[in-house]
Image (cartoon, rainbow, N blue to C red; front, side, top):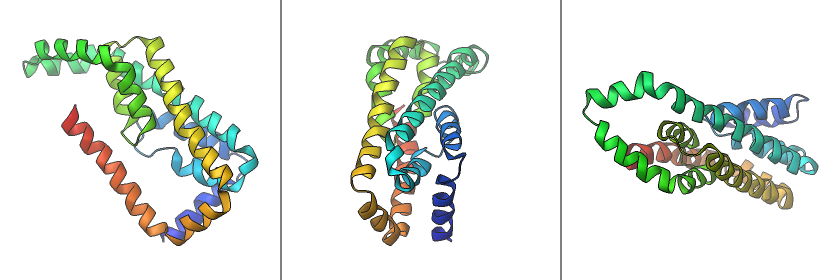
Length: 193
């Protein structure tokens, strides 16, 4: 079943609307969707290595735009949802302290979440909730998402066929590792934030 899904993803990556699908997944992943765009970016670059830089660029731009939407969710919905919850649990004062600390180190938090498997959407929403400077947020997001997607595209461009063969031979193991990384990111959110 896993090989069928892999082959389907490879087929989708060669579809004429694949770049649009990648942009949509990248956009939605940055604010609400749990699956990272790498799932589609990897087979797309492997299927069309000559377009690696365009694919990485689309992924980065859509991801940053999605991050701004996530920021907006945190910024505009905090008063209706977040603030009443904090007051109900008597955390209003603690949140003010957290907000100051977060905004002092927020650019690094955005950069860390944008490069690593840590759920980027959590940081995009949190940045809006705390009122992190929007230009700082956007610049950190561009740097982080650009670094992540362009390094991945460069590696796939350079080592395309051997990496494709490696993935195909170890698909089950790689799927398990991806699940562990994804779940680990959400566990980090629970215990670090």
